[in-house]
Image 1 (tube, helix red, strand yellow):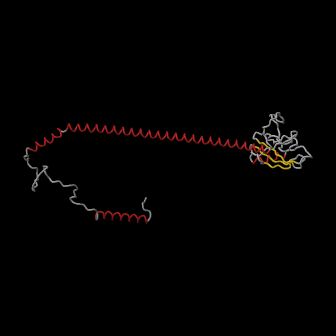
Image 2 (cartoon, one colour):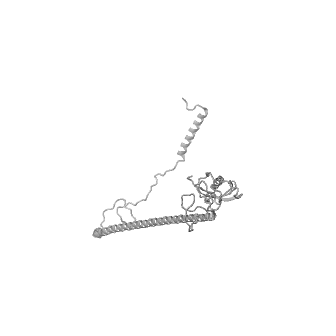
Image 3 (tube, helix red, strand yellow):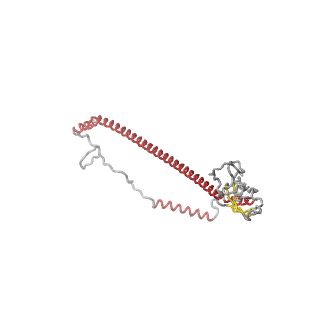
Length: 305
């Protein structure tokens, strides 16, 4: 099996071999130079046998022993003895230094403990202040809400009392009870003289009372008797009272109904049902009655109806 199957592969092999030979030849011809002997690295040290010397003649071999001053060997033991004599103070100094280090470490630990305690006390104080502030804010908010609720209830009570007074004034003084006579007359179970201050004691109409969503009897329709009526349920789920102005003809029919008159406390969504309820009222026919007699019907709506 041949490695070179084509002419181009053979030419490539020859060319590659030639290039490799040229590269090897160049390495031998222009390769990196070298020193013979090679360069030495480091510091050259002069040959000698003693630590001290003088002169310019360099001996080639070690020198013979030479006499040395007597003082030199005597000095050396003295020098060696000096550290021995001072060893005890050095030990004392080491002990003192260790004690100092221990004392410093103790003081540092005490300082860190005091700092940690101070930080803990400051944190507890801040938390206590924050808790006290939160409690004070909560109490202030609760007091404000309670005061607002109290004011709201007071306003509602005042508004109801005002509306009742206005309705009493509109209907001829309902609820007035400052007379001196005794007795009780009416069609309710509650004691009292039902009617209006400017009414006829013998008139069959009592001006009525709200009737649990069924509509009241006509206020101001003196002498027309008691009406028949039916109940109309409103589309919305609201409670309230709607005063409806009605126009009644001689036949006793309500020919016109206008809801929302003074004294109304119900939502506007109750007006249509109140109007339809007022239109269902029918009084007995009376040829002597005015051609158009104006009165009022109070329609009371409740979600329980």
